[in-house]
Image (cartoon, rainbow, N blue to C red; front, side):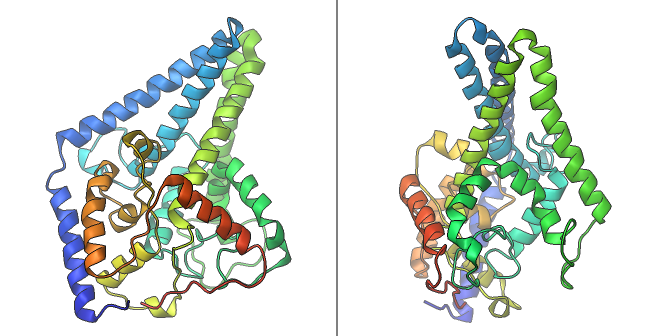
Length: 361
């Protein structure tokens, strides 16, 4: 259903009201929440690293240590890092939990991620040719992209991307600017120079490699190999989890993409409308929401990226009611259901043909 100009205006007003209601409630409860999560993350990381060294007593301690370290890395990446870097807690003016000061425990430099994700992806969500997060330049996910031979094996490409997800995210900005290969596109303008991009990429990546695969194994003494393998496994678990959550929020069967022409001069109501049609939620218990950084409510995150994510489940009830009022599809379902449609979408568009997904506003 295509909304009228008046309906788009009314939609914007209602969603702005939902946001304003939450903004007026922000305070000590939110500050205590994110600090508790940060404390949990740090204790999990410390406990995990200690237990891996104690693995000589029993391998079960090593395994528990790996799982705790993976939990710490997931919390740092999702509920803390992703949300802090969106500026959700800037109002606290905390020395650590501020978007200009936080640096997360992944290979991607925080500043590089903010440039490509916060601005480009959240401004041009699912606009073909402008939002490079739609398929990450590797996967064909609609017939709006020309089929190429390499798409035949994009199932394997997806698996490899998921396993190395932190490195794919880190390389994303350099690929866009064609720093190492190809000729730059005329419409590509970087906020920083190529030398700065390379310095951030190699600098942050090297620090991560040294920390996990040199420093911690060395101080573990005779348990160095166990610690090295444990760090490798914890990073793998974090990468697979993060990738799965991101794909379930962006690439399910029902999400739409848009052409650049139809989005020119769009109103705030039309921007909200595009975010709702281009995103997917999945349901689950509280612990699942926390481990996803509340990106289980991807629709609400795309609508309100700077609102502390712990409010998204409650906001989702209001947003779903508003969506029904304007007959806007609200894409939600169980985690397994949503992931199955992601997998089927990847495999369907690995072959020629398929339906175009562009949705007229």
